[in-house]
Amino acid sequence: MDGRRTPVRMVEAIREELRKVPEPCGLLMRTPMDICRMGLVEDVRYEAGRARITLVLTDMSCVHFGGMRRYITDVLLELPEVEAVDVVLSRTALWTPDRMAQRH
Image (cartoon, rainbow, N blue to C red; front, side, top):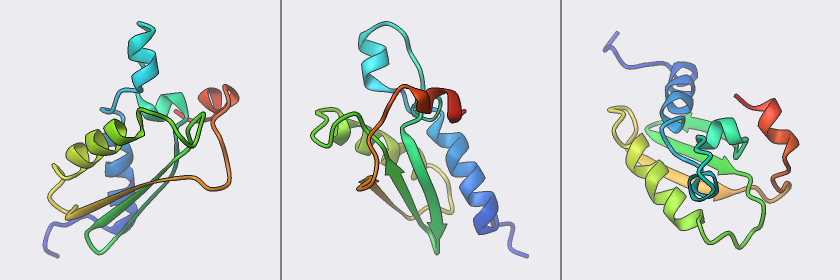
């Protein structure tokens, strides 16, 4: 074994790294929270060096999406096994407050 994590372990590691990404509106409102705790992370996948993160936002035209995408990419590329990062928006759901209680 070469010491690299399995895809399942990589998804766990990616989720842990995503906890470093602050949710921008919470920062503005002085109630800091990470994107996982806020419930913005819909899905995390990992395959052959590529991480794919699907976010759920309050609005498909969220002005903070570009900044979050850059932050997520920077954080995940610090993992040695991650060579590329795709951050996409969910096409099936929008964020609602009840997601905060479901995702931690």
